[in-house]
Image (tube, rainbow, N blue to C red):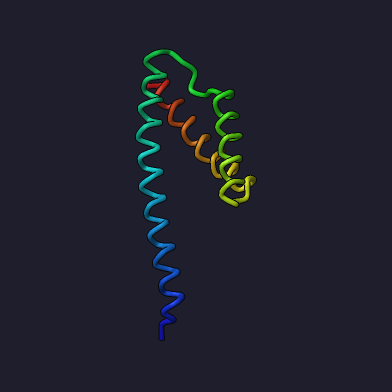
Length: 93
């Protein structure tokens, strides 16, 4: 027996999860292009100033969205760390 209200909530969650995956895929396509550009231009793979500005910006957005800023920072830090790994790989060729 299925609860129709619960089923609607779960369908919404599934749709949001799918959107998140596709958005992350698009983000990583762009950051991989940035990594190639940095490698070609002999720029460092990490930009701590940019990272801190992005974290501050997203913490502010999280607060506006009533999302825990600590969670949003952890999530963004995880993504940034993965992007830096990709950029370091691009530097090595």
